[in-house]
Every structure is written in structure tokens, then in C-alpha cells.
Figure 1: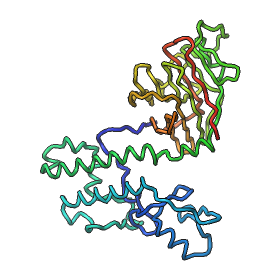
Figure 2: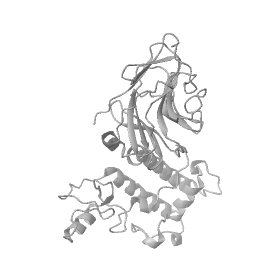
Figure 3: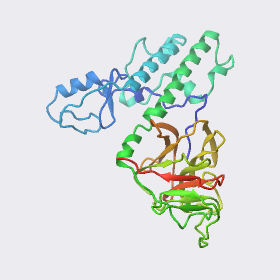
Length: 354
């Protein structure tokens, strides 16, 4: 499992293919996204649909059809990405050997046989992971070139942030409709310092230790798993954290050691509010500090089909907190940790409205 860190290095994902239209083989121009999720130039779609009778209104990629012509709206994020890619290519071209750059103003993509392709100067900057704003004279030969590259990297970092918030996990709102689950706490795993409500959806820090029967499945620390084993499919649930000063929510395997804590094992992952104005993610026994804003309601999106896990703040509007890839060899369970042990603190598994 590996997280997507935000650093000064720019990742390798930005290629022409990522921003291309398969119909015209060019960079997206007035991009429209169909209900199936695939995007094309609007004029390309209209021309394609107008030229054929069979499978009218079908997506050229997946062939998913519609009873009537979809209303095409501009995907402003994709338009922004395509515009910034064009700008980056022009800036690189202006300070590079023309023999290694496409013609000015060219937006055409390489042929299918040559894909994927990136403009050479961008490729070198991306794949090296070098922070060019601190580059040595060997990498940057003039202040003008350094300034241009810094501007380009700044734009690409903005693109990365937008992708994290809006593209990579664009499916999360749909998950609330199609992947919503309502887990319940498993009493066999419940720590003796915690109590669970009758409906098994609220867990509270006890005012005194509870006399639960000893079991090798019971946590020695103030943690609990849910009863639902998630081994396939897509799942989404929400946790109300507003009445707990110190907490962690995430997923873990049932085999997680009962004397370990959430996120500090190879088979668990979580986001954690320390109660000291710090929100962190724990993944692969590694902490990533996320900021100082406390989410009141956390949404967890687990896509086992693609091996993805994401955490959202869903108080007023959905905001991505952290995302990572997972490779689970055994089923995963919703997991909770109420630490600080302030009596009366509690977490609630919310009923997601579908």
C-alpha cells in the first residue's frame, strides 16, 4: 500500500493521452464528460453522433448508450488542465532546441502505436523528481529559464491538487448512492474501556472498565472493529467524530494484533485527529501530516475492485483528506480508536442518505 504524497517533485502521470480526445486524437477542446465518465471534445461528439444512426448517443470508448442525446456541459477542470498543458509545452519549447519540440501551436497527439508520449523536456523533469526551483547551474542555465520552469511546476502542482480533489476520486459521490453501507460494531473485538449502544452504531469511552469476558479477539487498547467483512466491491460509510477529542478511523484486517494500535501495523490504515490541532494519516506504518483542520464527519471510500482507499471530510462539502492504494490479502473491517480516554467521548457510524 502506498500513499500519494504532496511534495515539490511532480509525478509522471501528466501525459498528452491523459488530456486527449480519442476521436480527433488532439488535446481536449471544450471537453464534455458523458455519464459513463469518459470525456471528449464536444464538437467531436456532436459530429460523430450526427454521422451515424446505429447506437446513437453511445460513448465511443465503452459503447454505453442513452435513450436521448445527453446534455453536454463543459468540464471546466479538464479544460483548465488542457490549457495549462499547452502553456507548459509552449514555455518549454521557447527555451529548448526546436529539433526536440513539436511545431508551435501543435495540439495533435502521437499515433496510437507511439502512445504514451510526453514532450521530452517535461518528461525529464517529471521522471527525475527534481525540485527545479532549487536546481544547480548544471540543470538550469539562466535565471530566465529557471523562472519559466518554476512557473510551469507551480501550475502543475495546482493541477495535481485539483486532480486529487476532483478527478482521481470523482466517483466518491456516486459511492454514497451505490456503495453505502451501515456497519455495526463487533462486540467480540470491543475494548473493555469502551461501550456500544443498543443499535451497535455508537461507541463511547466508558467511565469505568467494563467486565467483558476475556477473549483473544478483544483489543487491549480502546479500539473496536465492525462486524462487516469487506473482501470485494465498493463500499462507503461515514463517521461522526464531533463528540470525540482524540480519534482514529479507518480499516484493518481481523488478524490485526490486539495489542497494537490502528495505523501502526501493515494490515491497517487510518486518519487520526490528535486533539492537538493535527490531522494525520497512517499508512504502511508511516505518518503523513494532513493539516490542522478538524473534520467533523469523515467519509471512508473503499474500492476493493481497484485497490483504493480514500478519506473525506463531508461536513458541508466533500473534501478529499487522503488517498492511498491498498493490497489486502484478507478481508478488511471498518476500524475505530478512541484514545485520550476522556469518559463520555463517542463516535457514531452515520446513516448515509441514499
